[in-house]
Length: 333
View (cartoon, rainbow, N blue to C red):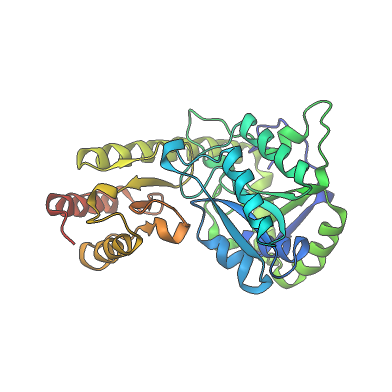
């Protein structure tokens, strides 16, 4: 984590708990910070898996904070404040704000100003800030990643760190999702104690620990891998955007992640979520393209889709674009 953050911060191992993937880390935080019926605010569109990870067993709610294309899907203080007040008037106890940085599915990277604004909001409300940094080393080459830890480590920082929790893992930055290595990093003593106990039921396997210890200890390889991984992700992203542009599909400018947020609003027969789902099913079953519909990410504007580009080779990718091109020539579904 220190390497991913450019060595700009020092991390304390005693404030870290390992779990079998980021999913149990999120669930542990839900159980630790909120009661059933209480909620976290989440800027939307957001990763569809958050609903499963947070809500299924803890019964803690997630309240979408709608971000629009007019602001490049960036969270604004006014919308965050108004959502908090509206939920409070309904009697829903807000326990925190959950964000991903870089964001999934849009690919926005939060800078110092945005992170400082979020910290100011959560500290003022005395609620928790949960920051999912699992794509930290997947930013595109021209963009820098800023961890929430860097803001907290600013000289003369007055923030109460016990209200901040980081979710991390090796699945995205190292491309080893199946190995199931997640991390909770927190400054809250009671949360760490609870997580240490709950992690017994979602522990990282001994074999995985041994392999990852060997991998992470090779600093020369790690440095090379992280550099090359960012280069290839950036190259692939630019290729995808260029091919989409050729066939008349625009996308939101992405700063990081293994996906891009594409705009198919002009293809919809009408701007409705039903039409979006109809298009999604057509692309899946008739065209042979599996995208993530914006509806599943709580996007307020029908017609946006997530396209994941990092798990296929170039040949397969070109097959996908040929299918896209054939569909766009007719745009009938």
